[in-house]
Amino acid sequence: MNSPDFRASLAAVTALDDPSRLALYEFVAGRDEPTSRDEAASALGLTRSTAAFQLDRLADDGLLNVEFRRLTGKTGPGSGRPAKLYRRADTEVTVSVPSRQYELAGDLMAEAIDESNNTGEQVAQALARIARDRGRAMGASAGDFVTALEQGGYEPREDPAGGLVMGNCPFHRLSENHRDTVCSLNFELVSGIAEGATGCECSIRSEPGAGRCCVRAVTAAAVADP
Image (cartoon, rainbow, N blue to C red; front, side, top):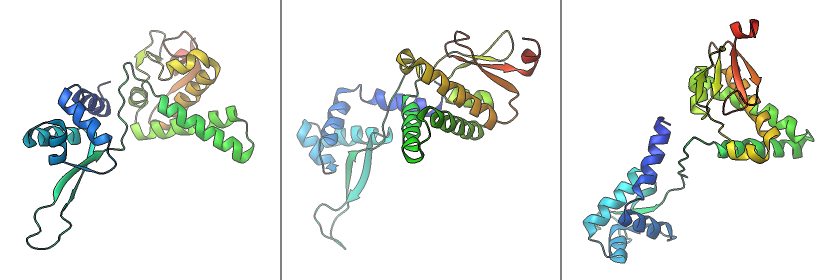
């Protein structure tokens, strides 16, 4: 939870805890056209300087996009400076404690359904293959196995028996009603991470109850002496 992405998302959500910033965000988000500082200040009864400061804070935190345009429609010398305008950003901001990756699960499952519709492959088989491929990409991108697991929300912890157990299931709520599907997804995803990460010498096992996730990473020594 100490990743840059988490800190940025937390800052964005925290920004809306201020009543004036929340009101400004809701005002801008509720309009089809971009909003000027003057329009926002007038609508909410704020001074222009206060509205400008708070709008810029929302933009800095990624909640608003900024553009510049001359509102008079004139161009050339004497047409004045372009106005700074704000509109709601398309970026979604979510904060989950502990970490959850429901967007990832939805993306993988939707891709598996599409693949099944296009090729006739069973959805479960497509999901297993796609999850392992995604895991390989995650492992390669992160570099090492533990970092990839941390970025995936698994909270890896040393296992006294050798290897790692997962302190968190990124798909916890889904697993409550779809345990077999989610446990299979976790196994393939973590197996792919191990294959894609540099220097990983762990064997991935599906062991419900090993931690707070059904997957356990076992070292070569522990495999030789279970």
